[in-house]
Length: 277
Ligand SMILES: [Zn+2]
Image 1 (tube, rainbow, N blue to C red):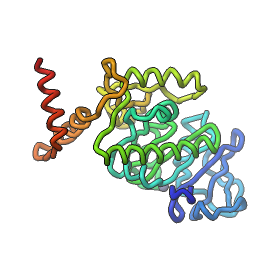
Image 2 (spheres, helix red, strand yellow; image 1 turned 120 degrees about the vertical axis):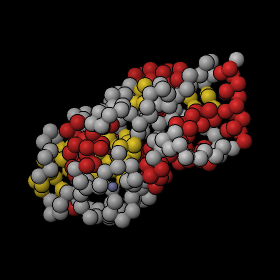
Image 3 (cartoon, helix red, strand yellow; image 1 turned 180 degrees about the vertical axis):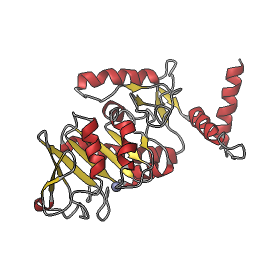
Image 4 (cartoon, protein in one colour; image 1 turned 30 degrees about the vertical axis):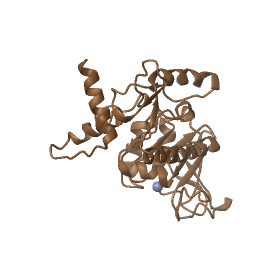
């Protein structure tokens, strides 16, 4: 993670289940690029240190919460990969149906609410999404992934950062074609034949809130993906969708100004004309 720039200085932490009662965890205040085996800590599932000279990670509470909520999870990885964390800072979830591999493995990558690092707020923010997701962004902080073994958890971190890079490039180029809902449904069926055990199904309904179910304390039960109806097409240009999202966020303030490119304005007019027919 350090070599790939997913962590700087002492950022990030990793843990693995050691049987039913114990966890192996990276220590507090150590750079992940310069660790040695003797620095590792062993704790119980309540976070009590059983072995090791150093104290366990300052984000131990978040790890413990994941293991409590997900009996299937064997490893937890937390890092601050810069492009994905940029999306987490911008408040933009990686929930658009764009890449088949991301949909079959992670489904959607939501953003857990902002919480002060190392406090009990963070496990609480993570709880909303962890039962239905193997990866999420943490608002203004970083990303969290889980897996059935250490490398599957780590590879999901790689997938998130890779997906964030691709999404950033597509958005810089000014356009994203989205996979149609029908195609997303087909990919969901393929999960079975690929042997992917996702914690929850994809719900590819753009009418549902992308951020998850409404209400504080509620828990996501499916992986909400932004995928428009294809009406025969497998790829759908995002111009109209993006506009609707921006208009919706602008509505929170009557004074908000929305700037449109010529292409977006044309798409909006076209859509309005089509709906009048
Ligand atoms: Zn962190």
